[in-house]
Each structure stands twice: as C-alpha cells, then as structure tokens.
Image (cartoon, rainbow over all chains, first blue to last red; front, side, top):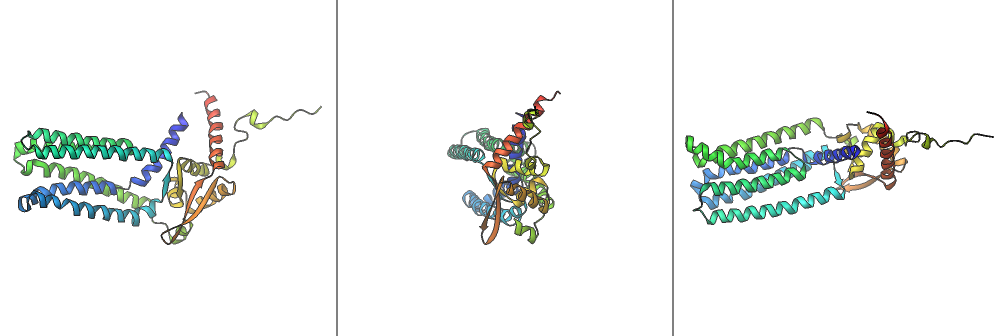
Length: 211
Length: 109
C-alpha cells in the first residue's frame, strides 16, 4: 500500500508540474478583474455593451497566457503524456464541469428573468455554483488553493453587500470583494510563474539538441 | 559429494536485485516514467533534478538494458525526443518493487 502511495504521489507531482506554473491563476485573476471593471462601465455603456467587453478581454487573456505557456513555460518544464487513468479522470472532470456550467447558466438565466427575487437568492445561487465548480476542480486536479479561490468568490456578494450597508461602497461592494479575490489570484499566479522561471532555466542549445 | 548450489534469489530477495533499476538516479527516472505514458528530457530533468549529462548517461544505460525507448520526433520543425518505459522496463520496475517491498515488510518496526 505504501509503495502505491509513493507512486501516486509521483504521478500527482508529475501532473502538478505541467499545470502549477501560475498561468491558470493569472487567467482566473484576469477574468475576475474584468468583473471589477464592468460595473463602472455599465453606467456609461449600459449592461449589454459593458458585458460584451468580457468576450474580447477573456479571449486576449486566454491567448496571451497560452502563448506564454508555449513560449516560456513548456520549454522549461517539458512535455509529458499521461497514462489512461489520469486521462479518464480529466475526462470525468470535463464532463462534471460542463454539467456545473450548464447549471450555472440555468441559474443565471433564472436570476436574470426574476429580478423581483430577493438579492440573497441571486447571491446564494452564485455562491453555490462557484463553490461547486471550484470544489470539483480542486478535487479532480489536486490543487487545494482552488478551494480558497472558490470560497473567496462565493463570499464576495455577501461581504460586498455587508460593506455596502455599512459604508455605502458603490455597486454593492462587489468591486472591492472581487478586486481582493482577483489580487490574491494574480499574486499567487505571479509568484508561481516567477518561481518556475527561477527554478527551471531555459535549456541551452546543446541541451536542447538532446531534448 | 558436491554441495548443491543455493539459488541466491531464494536466500534473500535482495540478492538478485536488478542493479540497473537499483541505482538511485535511475530508480527516480523509472519511477516517473512508470507513472506517466511518456515524457521528454526537459520534463525528467525538471522533476528529478539530475543534470543533462547525468540524465543522458542513465537513459543510455536504461535504453541498452531495453527498459526505455527513446522516440525521436518533430515538434514543429524542431527535433524532439520522448522517453517511454518499455514492457520489459515496466516489468523490471514491478519486480524490483515487489522484492524491496518484501524485504521492508519483513523488517521489524
């Protein structure tokens, strides 16, 4: 049993090495940051056009980080292909995430079409979906910090509302709470990214020929 | 009458241990190759902490023993080598694991 634990640990370590470079944290942080900016734009551009801003920003962040991964991280960390059990686990993760996202969309549409519902219902449905999505990701991918991100995001509307009632922070305090969450994600991402750059230098051309 | 020769493997499970697998650096490389399908040199250097020279030497020994296969391919226009554990390598690692486990299980706490 003990040797299986060690081998499982080695597999987990190998898997983490391919994902734990901070770029996913940066992507999550950038996406969260957009939600900090959008409320301020909605008063000028309206809800639709300010929300429309999300698409290009997400796209740019995704492609920029994808390029960073290909050009900077992969040459340093290397390439690995996993065995069927890990691939099956990833497939299960994808299916469950699609189900969670469909549920999120359904709840979002229900919330949008029932504005008369009390605010806490919208906040609770948002928190539920976020906790579910991040919890699933943390469990299947083995990254404990995703639980923290999920908790911070889920708490954002409640803490924001509390701040709004106490100090009348604009937009129900969401820019503050989501801003803190985005800052945590980006700080973790940058720390991880620079740690990879420091610990794994780019192979020299002679070494590269071996690789 | 000559004494019958005892099989060393029957005397002690470690007596006939595979020396190719037993070296710490190679054991480390084999452990990572055992848990993944295949990996490149950079990944193995990154995870094991071995130098390029050391890794190349150990991989050559493992390849000579038939335990790993080095697959040359192209990524874009650049040549790229992936290392995969062969069936024999997987079997040798399992056998090594079984023997060491047997010895360790028999040891008192």
